[in-house]
Length: 372
Image (cartoon, rainbow, N blue to C red; front, side, top):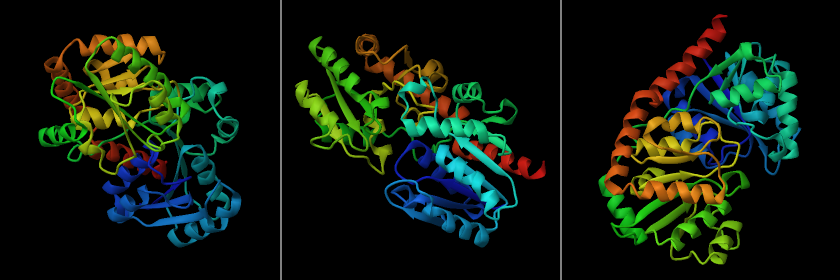
């Protein structure tokens, strides 16, 4: 079986990470077409041994990628084409007009809690997807919540398949040496609680609301330090760095650029905080931290609450006072109790979310589509 994965780009995002993960398990069966110029995740895919084709688009997803996609179809002759995210899904369906004779599968990675929060272009592709969602053989979602939401917009429930994200548990694992070294490098003393917020600078991620909550925690006298990492987070004149200065939190916050070795950061944390307001399906950062033995506090967005189960904490919203209150309760549990939660989180990841088993579910789904 040969699968061509079609995606808008290969930047350092959650969907791109999961695509690279799946390709790494079955590289000989995989190829990737990126509508845009490939980003940082392309290196991991190439190292796994899967070829990458590109439409060459630099600034926006425009139709100039169509001839390149037609050429990739002719060269590879894939058995299945799988789209990733909205633009990739629409492009995947187009392959059936570009010479592809096999089935198409969609992969939806986004939850839609409030359409008004989405960009106009995102609203358009979601609604266009509802019109076109009868063309793919299956629609894969990475969360039950996202499936239910999209079906309310008209995506056919009969085609639903829910497959959670999978994680490389040999890469993401507890590491006491990395923990001690990273905390020392950050100047975080043992008695302090190190909180982590990992994600690109985007309003849905709620960095600014979180910083207001952190200011409240510091004012209460809690011994906390927060490391924030992700695309755009550490830009000196960006909104996150500006908010840190305005809140006078420079001594309580460390801002980091995105890293290709997040497994060296997670073990240093006492708590992973996901303060998102909307848009999350199955947040990768939560699973990665849990695999490293770190409990997570998540807002009730997407399937985040399902992922943490009883090994972490859920906040009913991303409101500033709600976040502050919840973190205060968690910190009061103490380092030792949080460590026990982290051990349970690791066991949960091993039991339910190992990469090999999730990749096998994907493969069985695609084989089933071919046999239908």
